[in-house]
Image 1 (cartoon, rainbow, N blue to C red):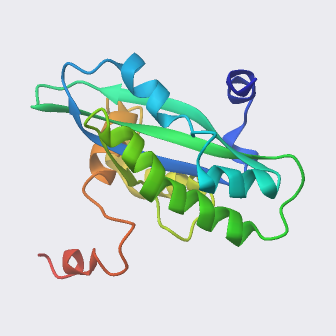
Image 2 (cartoon, rainbow, N blue to C red; image 1 turned 135 degrees about the horizontal axis):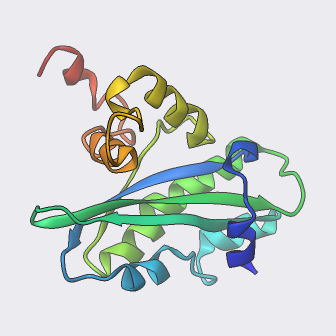
Length: 174
């Protein structure tokens, strides 16, 4: 059922659409070995909290890039399926971020993959952020580069969205 939901899903209409970056992926690790690790565990306390308010985290896209580097990198996107409109979208977002930083990180660590948030913390949906990134960064123009998603993923991997002020040094040229 979740696979069908994911196929028929439109990210533009989602309240919660989360973009995560995968890094340090061993070259020998197949995408098929990573895929089960991005599925929320039904035993998770955070997943149960979300279910209690009528919400479910659904993986939407998983992509890996294999370059002449020591490790692969990629991204995974999730949306939140709401059976009824949650009273507090802020609470839903907080729970999803907590799930990513704790449980998703642990699940992926079991196959030696790291995960970080690929969007600002306070954005419920990555769509407007990623759209603005493409509008402002001409080098991400799909007509100018072979794989704009790969370049976007690499660029975002150099930015830390999960720590307040962690990018301030970049403003000083450092």
